[in-house]
Image (cartoon, rainbow, N blue to C red; front, side, top):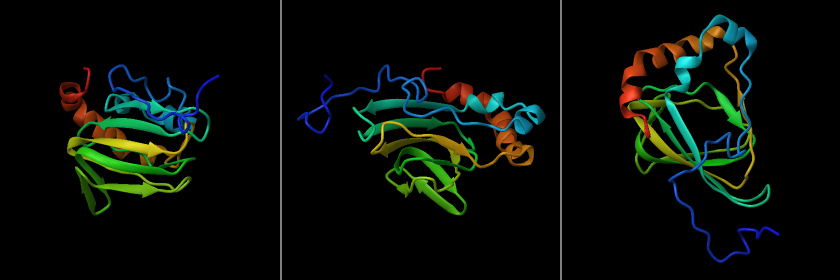
Length: 168
């Protein structure tokens, strides 16, 4: 019988070999409307992100820790998650409107609250802390018009992403 992490005195984890977010079954795949994928090629967008599950506790209310790397200028579409999340910037910058978050900064976002951000000129690395081991991602930006600037940034940054992508 698995031991709940709250009854264990200590648990260890390493980033090396951490599974991808979807592979670890922490997050379900987001749905992108067919109208978007029929109108624009979203494949360049995927090259700008490396997201791994560093820690996944036992049970649905266990803790999870996700590490995200987004390349320079990477734009996340407006989206939400079904679990509260505390974000902590470990490197680079996040641009959210006129606000810039740098190493040591972070933000909290409540479950189901939509948000978006853009990685700074050198990209960004963030840690995502959740008191849930399973959550979804609902993309709010579901029109080709909303995706065009996201994809323009992806195409413009492909070479830089290839040079700086972890494990690449």
